[in-house]
Image (cartoon, rainbow, N blue to C red; front, top):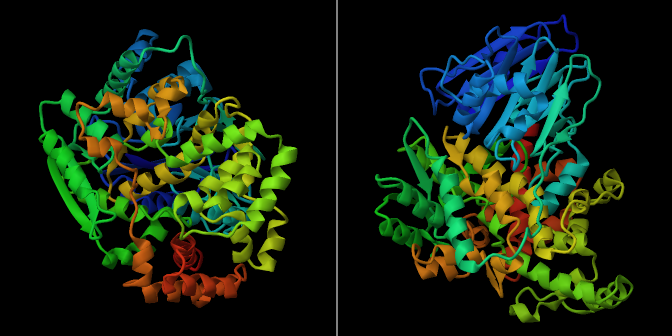
Amino acid sequence: MCGLVGILAADTAATPDRALLERMNTVQFHRGPDEGGTHLEPGVALGHRRLSIIDLAGGQQPLGNEDNSVLTVYNGEIYNFPELAQELRARGHRFRTHCDTEVIVHAWEEWGESCVERFRGMFAFAVWDRRRQTLFLARDRLGIKPLHYARLPDGRWLFASEIKSLLVCPELPRDLDPAAVEEYFAFGYVPDPRSIFRHVHKLPPGHTLTLKPGQPDARPRAYWDVHFALEGAVPGEDASQQELRDRLAEAVRIRLVSEVPLGAFLSGGVDSGAVVATMSSLSSDPVNACSIGFDDPRYDESALARRVAENFGANHISETVAPEQFQLVDQLGLLYDEPFADSSALPTFEVSRLARKNVTVVLSGDGGDEVMAGYRRYRGYRHEARMRALLPSSFRRPIFGALARLYPKADWAPQPLRAKATFQALACDATEGYMRSVAVIDDASRSLLFSKEFKRLLSGYSAVEVLRAHAGNAPKDDPLGYAQYLDMKTWLPGDILTKVDRASMAHSLEVRVPMLDHKFVEWAATMPQMFRVRGNEGKYLLKRAFERDLPREVLYRRKQGFVMPIADWFRGPLRQPLRQAVLGGRLAATGWFDQARLQQLVDQHQSGRWDHSRPLWSLLMFESFLRTRVDT
């Protein structure tokens, strides 16, 4: 895995600043500690940090075609590069390396912007074409690899794998985007295409961006989307189970190509278990498996991970995350460059550190919940959608809205008695209803959290608009697919894949995700709903397909997730650090928060009467971001 940076000049005759390029490139050293390279010429500057995985002796970047009129810098893996190289050689292109990077420059020469449609893998890359005076940026279909860009006031364009490389440019304005702050406190991350900084943008997954020197503006172009639609007759369950295994085996097999040590992340869940089971079936050597546990047995899955490892004779190593590792919070703030409120970033950082002691590449089960419909919220949303379909909105909104206002909030009560949230969801339209199921802090709670001054800055903007921007392309007659589609456009790239990329690359570790192979995703989207969810069982077909490989308690236990016991930590060993961060001067200095509400959240949580761990963690990470990124 690697990091890329670059500068596109405002004038074709101007050569960008070498010192700036070098600083941008050095900041991403962790993404590629093996080698670094730069290229400057009139109009453009390209930089690259390399983590060597394939063709260790060759493949240095920036890499060009035969006469260096086309150059690329690239982060990722294109798994079908041998087939593409063979096709391109037959068309007269000459290769001097054996790495996937060189395929990009010749594919650009041969197919232009449509070259991305031929690549199978994870990637973010830039191509500079001197003859066309064109810079072409591209990001993979699911958003596994990141790419950020910004236009400076003087007309230059900057791009980089991580925002931190852009921030070294003194001319880049650093003012925060209030809409992004609203989105962060709603989702726990800032969704594409925004970033927390008003002038920095993320290239969305499945998009390209074409730039020319002096060009005042440019819009990303979509080249791929996933379509949830049943194709043809409903297949038999036994045949579908075998097809799932075969397709996953192919996705895993092409991700086992490596010239450096390779392993796997292993939790106590079905997704990573299925990946490890498949890896074991494809290799005669034991799988190197890594796990992280917690000292609280309610959250610890390490025993189940150990059992799966023993089933396949894997070389298994495991460590425990304790409250003392809370000191990593500020380090996470520096890694993510934005506020990032998924608390599992900390154990992901730790399992990446553990894995890097023995391997350079790991396979993970990330994406399984989104692709195979594993989240509990999918089942709840499907039930709500059925009720919405039975009742017109003219009836639902006033009746259920009134019931929601009258019914008491009962987070302490058994699930069947927590009707307030259900009434609220049924009073909403489809998009608003799903927003309620994914929000870290709901609309009403955000309204209490923000000050009047900050609400004026928002001018009525609400984070639900992020989902509305994608809802028009989501399947209307498939509520399950509707929810999965929205997650694939927001939660998956914005949270899951961002978390894994930054945490792993901090340790110079490459993570490959076979369940997000786009061919596997496209096939899974054509499965009938009954193969995705059966009754209250999510990931139905995946679980049935691996019943002979994985323990029943791994397949059919209640989904737990990769979460930390932060609610208890905030009342115990982290009691004072929490108060200092949330009630200290840095959040107050923004003028964006209601101080009385912050005090109430801390006091109510630490009294044990309420669980406010999610909003408190969000506030904690925002405060860390302000200190580590804004104040420096």
